[in-house]
Image 1 (cartoon, rainbow, N blue to C red):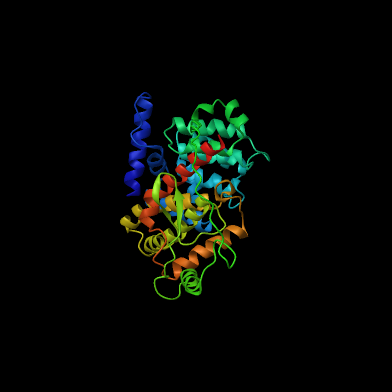
Image 2: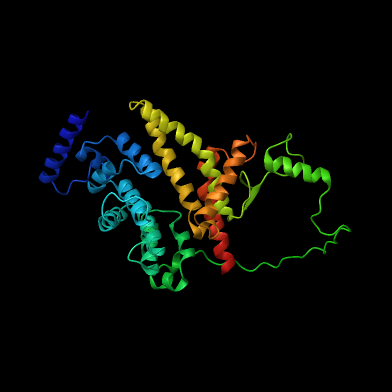
Length: 344
């Protein structure tokens, strides 16, 4: 198969020399696979391995240098965020800039790095806003909501002010009558049965958890909310990301085990190409202080452990992996819109 691909790569080069105006036959990722003779499943596996344990970096560097945008994005993010580098920070940055010209996910990654001061030793909010605007032009439906984390002056200087959502008209709210406190002190006092039911829910003991409602996060415009395993001190987006991370983890681990056991399992490789970026998006949101409520390091790990504990108790609550796949991004977008409009 590699010899066939190599021959096809030579044919493409010759055809390109004969007619420079001909539109490319394949996307950059396929061309990178052909020119390096590294099969696409092997590249996908290397991306997953690099994100999970830092291995496979040489494969990613090879295809990134050949124009593979996803590889360039992952390499640069891991290196410039101070985790794993397989080349210099300078080359990682240059590879990401090249990928960001035509790939909106890479443009958003570059914007995040500039926003957070991960390149050049200081934040570049104006450059971040410009790359967010570029990602929007390339077709991203969520890039504009990153502007909410930048100073309004930087957004205006970058010429991206038109991407901010319009403010809502003020709505007059009607206040209900004040509630009287209970004689035993407090609006939220519970009797023994309620305390026991809550304990059953928290620690996974007892039966169905009594009358305690399963945790759901408020979702603007959605009455049912977003289901989670447990409500921690993280922001709503942080808790949704944590629940989706632990919900998707067994699926991803199973696919990785399948690909390691049988390298010809193309079905597992294909599914891995879908699941790995999803897990990456959950984990990225979970570890982003701008999204998770301002937490880092041990605090994030502690919250993640709580979500994992509730999943491992066999709780009937929390999201299914498919639910996260279908709803997490929209939930994050809707929360960002609501936050921006509240500020305005």
